[in-house]
Image 1: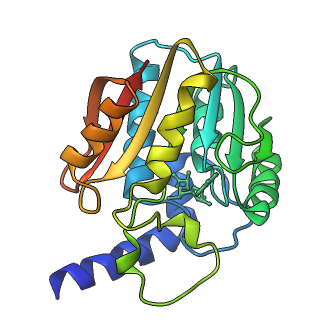
Image 2: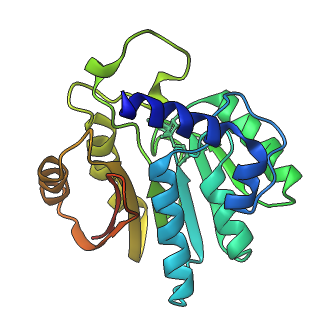
Length: 219
Ligand SMILES: C[S@@+](CC[C@H](N)C(=O)[O-])C[C@H]1O[C@@H](n2cnc3c(N)ncnc32)[C@H](O)[C@@H]1O
C-alpha cells in the first residue's frame, strides 16, 4: 500500500516540468509522455556531476537511449558545453522530440536514430546508458514505447546486448556509466554480465534511499 502511494507521488513529482527544469537545470519545451526521467537517471546525473567536480573532462559523450528529452545529454552539455555529445534512441519520435528540446536549450547535440550501436560510428570518452531492465513478467498491458522499460525475461537483454558491443565504441581510456535498478536486476546477475564481457568495475555510485546504482566500467 505504502509502495503504491510512494510510486504515484513520485510519478506526479516527475511530471511537473517546472520541478524537472529546476532539478536538471534545463528547459522542457515539448514532451510526448508525462514523465521525463526516473530514479536511475538521477543517479547517472549524480555520476556526471561527481566526475565534473573531480575535474574529469569528457571530450566526447554518447548518451545511449536518450529518451524523449535527451535529459542526460542536455544536462552534460549545460555543465560542460565543450563535450561533443551524441544522443541516440531506438524511437524516431523520441529523437525528433529531443531535437526540439535541444534547440530550445540552445544546445548543440548530434542526434542519431539507432538500435543500440547500429548507426553509431565514432568512439567516445563516455557512454552512458539507463537501459530498459524491467522483466517482461511485470508488464500488465501493452503500450507504445515499451522499450523504455522492458527487456526480456530477467530484464537483462538490453544490458547484455549493450555491453557486448560498447567496447568497440569506447576510446582507450573511455568509461561507461551503466544505470540499473537492483530491484529488478540483482547485483549478482549484473556482475556476471559485466565479467562475461570482460569489463572492470571502476566504482559504483549510489543515491540512497532507493535501489538504483550506476556502475562505472572500463575495458
Ligand atoms: C529508461 S529510458 C532512459 C531515458 C533517459 N536516458 C533517462 O535516463 O531518463 C530507456 C531509453 O532507452 C531507449 N532504448 C531502449 N532500447 C534501445 C535500443 N535497443 N537502442 C537505443 N535505445 C534504446 C528507450 O527508447 C528509452 O528512451
